[in-house]
Image (tube, rainbow, N blue to C red):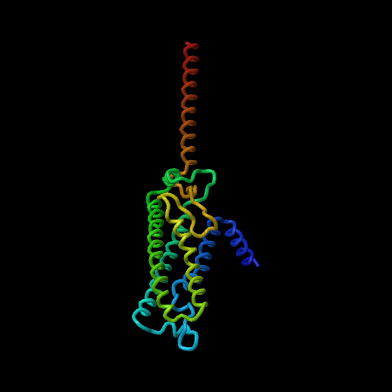
Length: 254
């Protein structure tokens, strides 16, 4: 019973942790999007095509045909790899932003203001955030290029084995799955250096402040040190006054 209670308290505490819930949401979102990554990459496999007098099976779609067909299949796999690379960096970037930054509606969110806020982090943490953001941008642009090339080449291959209206509908639908994602990614990465939008949280959530727990020089320490110095100064003044009073009493006795 105690074990169940301790696990319950643990999960209750975790669900109240904003960072934990945001990270869980990011992982869940990426996992759910793997389906659209697959169907929009492997167009030659998942779009219905005609094989003689019947609809091609997945196995038949994978069978080697002419050079164009081989090139299309290879590009399908290359596009899948590129998108998985982009998503892996997206997940790492999201985790890093959630860990070190936060959303603060009471602070400005322009590039210069966020840059000043980042100075509360160590140089290593600042460069790690910038580096991941830059790699995410590169992987996004590369994936967009691969996706465009794959869509065009796969289209030529598929329409050599055109079945009916179902071929066109599935081809367009599978591409739209990823086009909407890539447009969203483009708006996320096409920003100034210190503008960090979340790639997985709903809405265009911007991380514009540093988590106070990650400050390299927490302000409370400075205040305490200042207070100590003030108290020491007052104590010295009291001692000086006491010395004056004693010396005057001794003079009076003489």
